[in-house]
Image (cartoon, rainbow, N blue to C red):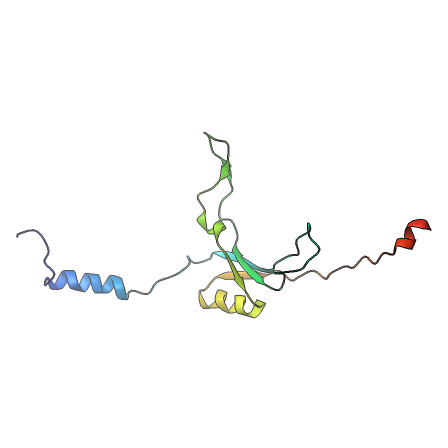
Length: 122
């Protein structure tokens, strides 16, 4: 068959090998992200899951309303990605390994408002 590249064609094999062996950049350059500790749910008293650290990407473009339905959305799919890590160091190592420009947002100190029932009658 003329015009169709056969598997034994050295140019075709070399091209396929180059595609397979080419280094893969997982994230585009200069993709900012933030690393922060999961906050406590304000609707519940428990603190389950607050020991995890999250890495999420900063939105690259503003959300805009859909002309048909009115829903807000954008073409930026990285907003849908949230990675969780057991520690801040693990999240920083991941960001450094994949050349993600990550900013660590420190956890604010917990403020305890100690109250007693007797304070209602003073």
